[in-house]
Length: 476
Image (cartoon, rainbow, N blue to C red):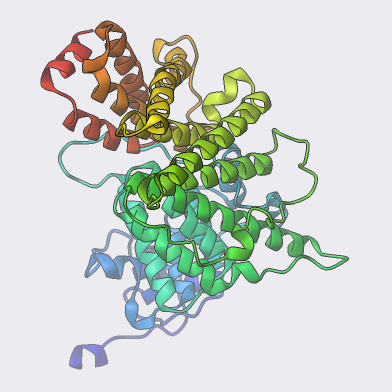
């Protein structure tokens, strides 16, 4: 208490607080704001403390919980941003928007000129964009956190604080969605499964499903808000389905929420994209369709009814529908761009899961015999198709644009590699099976430079691969 009474207050605010028109506590030798942001503090032109001053604790270095408000959080987040708002948005347009567009392009007309003018929710969204667009550094191997992991943990902490203060907005839900996507792409489990639950609840609390269609003469802001509400709602459902398929036994979290946005028959996709198959919004709609079929196949396989005939017919119908969608996607996408089609990747994943299950069906009657025969004869050509799709990049014949590559393709490649590994003893040509494994595993190793989930998948593959097979793969 006595130490607090002896604190000397400066006669005027420090130079930094005056220039930014912020409230200064005038504490010496360093005001509270400069201490939290680890900035040099100037009183009357004299430097009395420097950024090298050691904070009392890591938490105090970021936020002073005793005087916490949205302005303090925004300032702490802004210290992590090294690019201008326009540069970060341009990076989003190049690296994320082509395969996961959840932000309206009209945002570029509303960008703040500097972070001093930016709102808390936009600053948080910008940092999430910046982190998702950053390729992870090579692992140090000593257990220390990389810059990506450190920033990720900071973002998770800030989201928790913002939630505790009761602050919410569409941009914050978008930020949560991008964090969940980051966790999926880098194999952060069970964090991804936990995050999709909180993201669903955050969207539901914001009542995204209540976003009504714009008026007869809508403003640009109204149109953007409606478009983004639809896109982020569908993006959440896509992630929820994808995470559920990866997790295996866990249930969907979006079944009973946001139905107005998630009903594929009622999704009001922005106009003007009906025939533009190269438009990112069209691709997201295709990704949504493919995720719907993937979820239906996964649910039918994991939760069959007591009627075996019904189950077989349902799976057959879903596979037939998925094959039709696959044909449409192949027609819409150029051959060289198939590797960048997340919708095609999810569509192939659903078909592969169905065929894999069909090869393991216990034969009890003519129907199950037909099912197993069809699955057995169909799975090898599909595995060959997946291997041929990634082979040009592993061989060096083509260069993979990792900025355009969606992480949804990685699970398909992993599943293909896992099935080939499990079935290698059944192959009459073991050398061909080993060739496929080298290609599929080599592709995962290549993409690991962008998405760390590949390292996670390779670890799972190694656990399920006999040592002699691993030696054969490595020995070529």
